[in-house]
Image 1 (cartoon, one colour):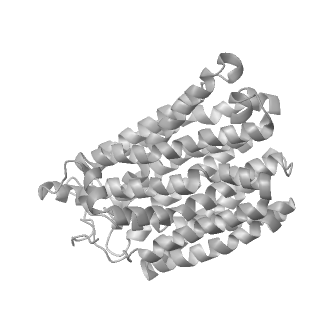
Image 2: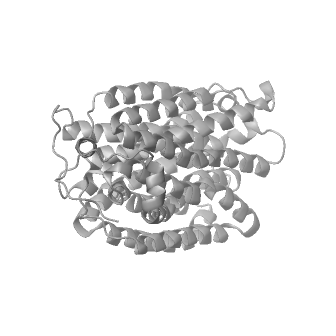
Image 3: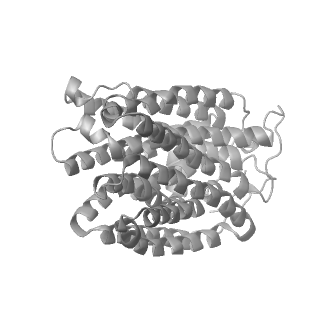
Amino acid sequence: MSTSPISAAQPNASGQNSSARIIFASFIGTAIEFYDFYVYATAAALVIGPVFFPHGSATAQALSAFVTFGIAFVARPIGSFIFGHFGDRIGRKSTLVASLLVMGVSTTLIGFVPGYDSIGSLAPILLCILRFGQGIGLGGEWGGAALLATENAPAGKRGWFGMFPQLGPSIGFLASNGLFFALALSLSDEQFRSWGWRVPFIVSAVLVALGLYVRLKIAETPAFQAAIERKERVKVPIATLLSQHWLPTLLGALAMVVCYTLFYNATTFSLSYGVSVLHIPRPTFLGMLCIAVVFMALATPLSAWASDRYGRKPVLIVGIIAAILSGFTMAPLLGSGQMPLVLLFLVIELFLMGVTFAPMGALLPELFPTNVRYTGAGVSYNLGGILGASVAPYIAQVLAAHGGLTWVGAYVSIAAAVSMIGVLCMRETRDARLM
């Protein structure tokens, strides 16, 4: 699939889309959205089971919590269909504002849902509805943020500009995990389970207000404006995508599997396993995750720079090979229960997450023409989430219970191999020109 040539983004007529404004707007939105998403991931590993599914064993509670965790990944492709339609029909800016609102409202309301002890089975039902809302919002966020960055990028720097939405998750994770870490240090276990876990969800409302302020200041991207002038918009972008661009959509989704699997097994599953099985104190494990995610943030610009210099595929191939090998480190490092080795495992996995994740900010938009780019990039990204993340903590929990961490490590390696197939089958996109 090819895209028609056009010069890389020049400032639009309004002069509003300066590089600094674009970089900040694409970064801040994904940082906030992923803060919201990771707040739930952390809560699922720590308290969602006992608060909303109090009956049954600790393993049953953990599995139930991870099922609610996976609901959002089922919703994310739906969100990418909905917001992708409007992003390709109406514009990037207004769609990004709407996705941020949906995500923010859903996250904030989770902080106010009473537990099972207060309202019975209605509690998990409400939780699942709001978790679904989180998925819908995030499904529309990433594709728009990536397009905002890449469709405004100067020639030869699309990987670098596309890195800023990819950097948002690192900062969002640090913010969410850092807040949980502070709460774990300052509150007793009883206080944390009673009300402390709700604080990060409620704080989301303030962050969303900041994100909306920034997003409302940006202008439409030059590529979308050009598509309007050429009257190239299609009536039903998802229909055009599935009929004409299904192969790059599938390959993009496969390429994303490794990113999700690395991240959620290194965070959500490992946190649950470390606290419940290895009996590592919760504040200690959260602190180690905060350290490890710094390495993910450091890998992101390095990998983005390399993808502009050497191409998207070579960088991804090297990162995926390392990810396949990393699966063999899970049992000896994480399973050791020794703090330095556990930390080393977390650093390896999250560093490789940054390496494989960074090029996606440019690669996925580059696979599609302007009239279906919002939909295509978002659908690929979020279908990858279903394959690599929605079931990852659940599968890891089941594998750990039946075969130990060696089986979980094998699962990580197999997931990375699936991504390798997708990357090897797709074209190099570094020199594609967006329009």
